[in-house]
Image (tube, rainbow, N blue to C red; front, top):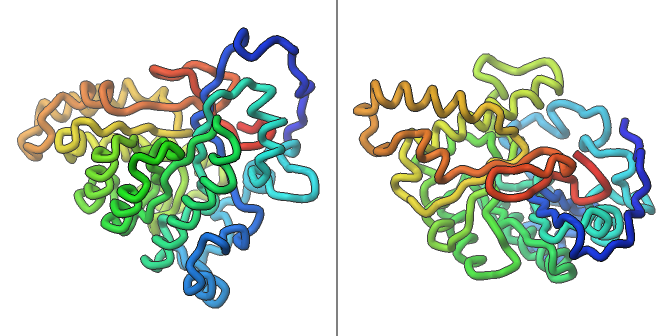
Length: 327
C-alpha cells in the first residue's frame, strides 16, 4: 500500500509561474454502472440488468490478476463517502488538477471499457453512453479536461460511426483503444477505425490492458500479476510492429498513435530489429513502403508512467488515476 508522504497544499505561487502539466492518462470511472443509466438506451439497460456484459474471457467476473490494492489504486485516491477512486470530479480537482497545476487532462476510461464486450450491439451502445457521460459529468464541468472517444473496436464499422459522430467536438481529444484485442491492431479489419480517426483528425490512444480472448503471453497464462504488468511493454511492441509492418501508416499517413502506460525504453531496439528484417524480407508485404524506424519516429508517440517524471517525447505529459496522486 502507498501512503501520502507530502502535504497536498503546495506553494501559493501563481499557476503561471509554475511548470504546467499535461496529464495524458487520467482515469475516470463511474461509481457504479447505474451512473450510465441516464445515457443508455432503456433496451440495453434492461439487457445489462438481465444478462450482464459478457466479455471475451467468458468466465472472467473480475480482474484476471488481483492487484495489491483494489484497482491498483493508492489508498489516498478514494474520495470521501466510500466512492470509487476516479469517480469524483471535485476530489480530482482538489487532490490532483489544482495542486499539480494540471492544465490539460486526457480522460482514458479503461474500467469499464466496453469495446471488448462480446455482444456487438451492447458494446456500441455502452461506448456511446460513456461518451455522453464523459461530456455531461466531466469535460463540461472542467475546461482543463478532454475526453477520449470510446469505441466498440471489435466492431470497426460501428466504431467508425461513433468517431464520425464525435468528429469536431472539442470535448474529445483522441480515440481510445486497448492493447489486447482479438487480432493484432495492424490487421485490416481495424482499418475503418483508422480511416475515421484520420478523417476526424483525432489521434489513436492505445492504452495497456484489455482482454481479447487469448492468453496474455505467446506461451499461455502467467501465474502472477507482476508478470501481467511486465507484459504491457511486450504487448505494445506487438501493437507497434503490427501497425507499422502491415502498412497502417502508409495507408493513412496523417494518422497519429499514442501508446499509453507501456513504457518506451524498448523502442530503440524494436526499431532496429524491424529495420533489419524489413530490409531483408520487405517484398513479403509491399504495403509497408518506408523504413519501420522512420515510421515509428514520425507517427507513434509515448506517454510516461508517473507524473513526477515529466519528460515525454515531444510534449510534457504524465500518467495518473484521475484522483489523488496515483501512478
